Length: 294
Picture (cartoon, rainbow, N blue to C red):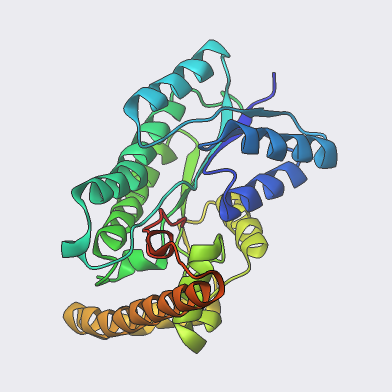
């Protein structure tokens, strides 16, 4: 049995791009996400297009019982891994005081707790011959305090620091850890709306998902520690080191609050259009918080 690459959040935009990129390179895959049906559709397409082996298993990574079931499934199949790509992550955007405690806990469980447990488990099941590569998706937000996304940005900072420390620990075992820190990625409708709300800067800092996945894998194979896609994003990161963190937080807060208001106004306009067309509108669906992909 050939060793596999495990990808969490595999049916989302970035997870799917990583799955395609790994399959294109001829690597067998183990895919996990919330919905088995979506996983099986993706697996069938990858098998047909690239002739690789694909195993899929649905798992709610925010649930410890579901995670335990995933690990037992892997253990019973005696699967070995050549790589791990931690993509699954999320956010409930908005002011911290307006978030429900369950929403905050979900961010921490998915972005931090699940990533730690999956990484820890797979280090026990590495291929004894192939070098083991870990890619963890953090965010450009990891480098900045971010009002309106305070918990999310802090969780991504945790992933960055954890990954750099883990990199040193596993290096002597022949393993590498690479942290991907992208800015905007059009991974789903909500992310696209957020990019649009930021105007020109949002578009300038947004990267093509397929290119990001391919280049991230290249960086991982070369053993690089951190990859920030996009010249403009890397330039902003360098320039930000000259500015006090408190000032950066103020500037980012102004931009995110403006973007947040823009999205709220757009939702109201859509609600009005629906009301005019149908005589009624389901306002709860227009303003419902959603778990946002990375």
